[in-house]
Image (tube, each protein chain N blue to C red):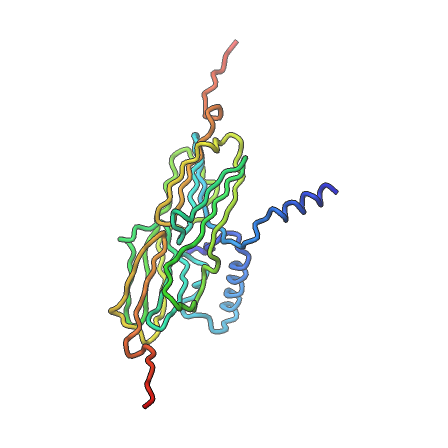
Length: 144
Length: 126
């Protein structure tokens, strides 16, 4: 897949990419899934005591075509974004937006419940909420 | 002297807040320009478009539903707003900009002014 930065002319993202590519080149334990940062879609992850929250920034997608799966503790988000059609006799001056198939894979912590996953697509962001198991949630223990 | 003044003025006018630069596609045909911009996470009411003289500014603020007490563990989108500024050329009609915004993608249509529309020019012989 061709590399395309999330935000064009982002010097820090470019430096980040360079650094990661250097790490790859020198083979200092890179992530098993390669260069994740800086591609499409971008993913923010947060956690609370009750859940893991994933925000996937995937604008311009029909939510029905999004494929979200949880299997063996791994969450996969896959889909495709079609390029905007260019009419005949038209010029494309700037071409920065991603198009094509994409797939992001996230390893979930051990204490999540794969049956309690909620996914909502709003304003181009896919928000996935994975609940933690009851037993894993913090509980206050009364001292007698 | 004049140069330093204009630089100082530019610095004073520069927006103070850091913002993400949204990726865009710009397509031009005979009748105008179509611009697509990716602004995921921006609701319609937080999108701000304005044209001033020949400057088009696209701004948007992110509004994500976050549960209480959430701690970020991995962040790729690190700023809560987008901003990008374009200079329009004079054949474009800034007064007739059409905008659509759906699923985080903004589509702007900027038509060319009447006098700039293509016209076939007859070549007279003789």
